[in-house]
Image 1 (cartoon, rainbow, N blue to C red):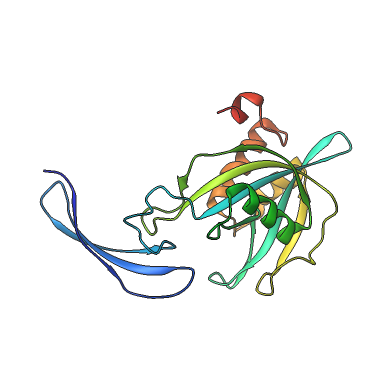
Image 2 (image 1 turned 45 degrees about the horizontal axis):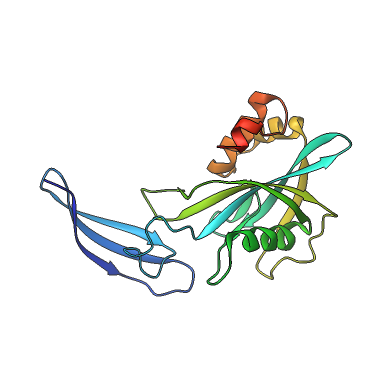
Length: 200
């Protein structure tokens, strides 16, 4: 017996995120009710379609690499959280344009080069069908908070490897995706991606 979707019902109607209820018959023959959030207007159609991008910006300064991080107020947490620049891919926008736009809006910096972009990956599949790309970029310019949207409250940080270690060890509110990236840097004891990794 194969798993089969029996029904899918949209429960809310908002611009950026909605709640759905599904009924599925699983491989054991049991009918399972599941609630999940989706940014898609049609979750059945938009499978494996990215709706957002997480950006890993590397800033070169005095012969060393610094990681551009954010400390952003997150409304569901009612607190600030360390993270990386990110944003939704709006209808009609390319992934590359979204990367450049979000870097400018959130940090004031400019994208010098896009080094790599991941395939679409899922962020929290037990709760949502949200699918994103992760982009590694080199950035340049001056940090500014003047381009942020009215709802955004973002502090921009240039972090060296000691800062990365401090954030990993002493921060209680940290994005799970970002934790893995910081841990990668800490294991290497430097902020860089090897050519082998970038060429994946």
